[in-house]
Amino acid sequence: MTPEQIESAVAAAMPQTVEELKRLAAIPSVAFPGHPEEPVHAAAAAVEELLRSTGLPRVQRVPVDNSYPAVFAEAPAPPGAPTVLLYAHYDVQPAGDPASWRTPPFEPTLIDGKLYGRGVADDKSGVMSHVAALRVFQGRFPVGVKVIIEGQEEYAGERLEAFVERNPDLLRADAVVVADTGNPRVGDPAVTTSLRGMAAFTMEVRTLREPLHSGSFGGAAPDALAALMRMCAALHDENGDVRVPGLPRGSFLGQGPTEEEFRKTAGVADGVSLVGSGSLADRLWASYAITVTGLDVPSVSGAVNAVQPVARARVTVRVPPAGDPKTTVNAVVEFLQQVAPWGVRVSFGDLTVGSGFQADSGGTARAALNRAMERAFGRPPRDVGAGGSIPLVNTLLKQFPAAEILLFGAEDEDAACHAPNERVDLEELRRVVTTEALFLQELAQP
Image 1 (cartoon, rainbow, N blue to C red):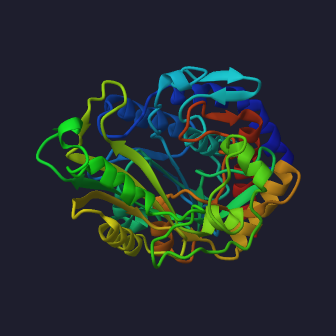
Image 2 (tube, helix red, strand yellow):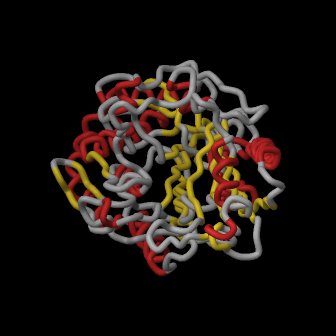
């Protein structure tokens, strides 16, 4: 196919692509504990049906131990052509407080060329990017194609890592497209060349057998909540830099956002300073970051005047691409034990880790992607980092060291992934689908 034919086919199919994205995003496929399992399985079935519609001769759901099924599909490579593995995930983050959404989170709503709803960007736009790009070729693919769409990336995604390690030949490919990132801004093409790793754990502090009257015992009885707050606050210095020994700041060679761009994207309130030192690219893409993401403490509503015997916190650590998540967790845990006041009892559990990723300088596949993205966007892409983590990527790199791993997608920085009012820009989605289809054609060229 010519580039013009590919562009026309993608544009003509966009109404269908958008309608199918709406139907897929309407399924509340939250794979977190405590959420219903049936919608997650329904999303897997919907993805299987979508992949069958592309003309791929083999499509099936495959079991993943202690997780939801992945959907796998493949078509053999024409003689002499490389094979490309396409990755995305069909599970989504919980919606959170419905009152924070301007539209119902699982009723995808189109407003001014943007589709709003949980998962429309992260990562059901990635699923549809693959589906729409493959449909362009009507079953006559220029390269070998393998597709893996997992069902529990947002929660404990490392389960698919074990699946890959046990089934290396199933996913073996010359190039891998990970459609779970995006551009800094709509229309600003970029390839993500680094990912931070992550680690998360739960910390519990205990001091008393039971709650005590704060009037009779406050001032002498050790308060578990006060101890927990002191420990969490000790993780950062006055500038907001991480204080844990052995976790130094890193540096990112590429260009990051300006402070004005970041403040706008992050919604930082007027007069509130950013935290940390170094460039924003350094802080966001190449340095450690520690965030307390949850607390189990009495709520303000209905609070009683009591000294608390126990308090818990969920702590998430983002790890630079070259860092080791397990070593990092050990350093953070050791530091927290050292700063724990009053001899309180501290325990740690529910550990999750995932490695980071640093791309090589690029080869044949990256050159093909550069050409495809320049045509689709009207200018060549630039390299960016991502502060988030995709646990599978480093496993793929270890399993297939000769493969080029390419990360791009429709999740721009204003897409509000993991937040209320998540959205995907449909023109951006069209450009990304066009990029992927052009890439597959370009990669087949001798």
